[in-house]
Image (cartoon, rainbow over all chains, first blue to last red; front, side, top):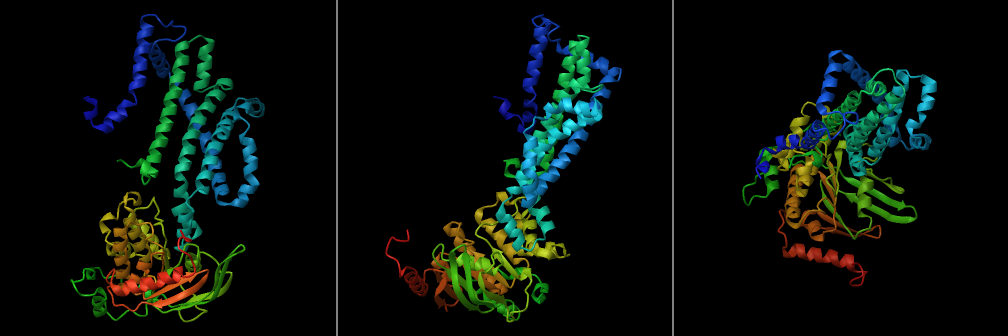
Length: 261
Length: 286
């Protein structure tokens, strides 16, 4: 096969797009011959046209920005608190004793089940969405940070102590880097939860954002805009994941799993 | 106490000895014999109990400055515990020990270094940065990098300075760990079976390296091993520990460098093995 002879880096980065592209082509073909009714699923070109229309009147960018902003703020708040508590409970048995079982109880409540309560508290304002996103991303970050810190190689910690590292040095040079692989697992998982929560929250209670755009389009039977919203969510999700992967690659370049063969 | 630390870094060009000339003769000829470098170790009736289980039952010992002492014994005899007590990784149940001549004088942490059975390198730090860990609080000093590099050169790994530890072989990792232990110019080096996980050939070259740097720096070396041949080849003095007590204290008065497998070494080795097995039937220890 000639494919094997291509420079593997470029080939691999293109390869991941082969399947989505193929699906698009088949979808377009089936829509054009009329196999898929427009009311069920409009052709990709029509979705694109709808996107262009919304882009030119500024509505699309406004809604994307609103959703993006909610996602980032919610993630920063929930992730920040989760990271801090994960560190605290990973480092200190006492802190874990007082906090962990409470947090585990809260964790077992599906955060989306709180939507009615959240609407009562905050109405459909920004706080509601940000609160839900923050709650959603909190747990994956918290649990993985705690786990990463707790499972740092004790032999390395012992080495650090005998070599005279101060607690601060020990944290920055041994404990935190040792916990990073697990923390990144939590980060990527949390990014998935972040979009999921936002979609649900915006669909149920919002007056702006991509989810709101989709719900409005549904009322006017604009299937192309609904599909467009879904595609945008997919792209935003992919973007967030790629950013996390890049960060992971930069921070974990020492890890055998990230070294090029 | 810190006087030794300010001493110039290891001289690098002296390590390729002309054939036939013992290395320490070169060293002795280069500068005044560094007899004051090592610290003596005095141990007074040291006991250690884990729960109900006594591990050390009264160790009394005096180790002269600069001596190379190896400790052998079967697994579980307490030899590693003794070492861990001395470097502060465990607290004694009773008894005491001190370094140098005065019991009330504190030694600096950088003066006592440990090499573990595992390399224990930080996987997220480059080789050179791992060596710098050994400088302890002096890591921020101006010549830190130069000292780390010089020590890395000493163990023959200067060209791997920017590598991640994960791509090094087992022997190379232990050499980096040795460089990390030596970079602060310790006055006592404790080695807890550091060659245990290496293959036979790497072991022999590591033994030579250990002997060479010890001859150069003249710290007090305390090596725990279960390889009796290794113990006799390297040591000035071999201690056998059995049931938490010193059961044999044997001086090894052979000239260096020693020839592996020579009759004198074999005789001493036999004597130690006889002592180790005197109370057990054949096969019991398997």
